[in-house]
Length: 217
Image (cartoon, rainbow, N blue to C red):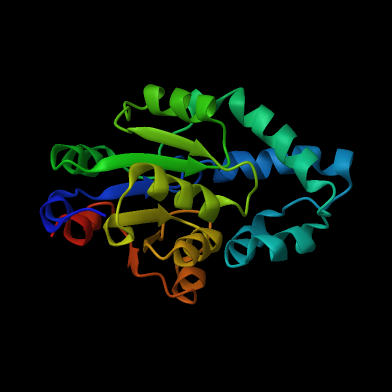
């Protein structure tokens, strides 16, 4: 057990989701899924359905499209393969560089937990001048982020009260709550702001600059 002096010196650990939170992958994912729909026998996503689906949970989206849990791993594998072919051409969802730089300058440890591959993430970050992260963890299952976060907390030996998880989806809020850490939802990603509000995250932000007050104050 650490003494009080070490606890006072502990700096925040800030963990980001990748798709939607950092990288603007939504349009690409929709295009890829529509291309795969005939092969795997599920519905295409119509333009007028996007906002509706952004308000739904992952399982509700799968049900709406008709993607069975048995086909899902194969759909994910092919989707990731397609994303990998042009990951460096994608742009950030918002301008994160100023706040990432500020957090780093104040001693925060920055990490990413994602269902994407580390290679994809690294290629994107390098192409967009966002090489500011200290660690990367990949959750092989789309509902496995809570276990990865728990692993990070154990390996880094940090207090849960000093850990922040930033994500754009309902499942990100659920993962953060399950672990018992500070959960920050962002309004610029996959799920709509109204959908996120219903899950009662600890914080919900519309701009990256809001992280300064939450994490550094």
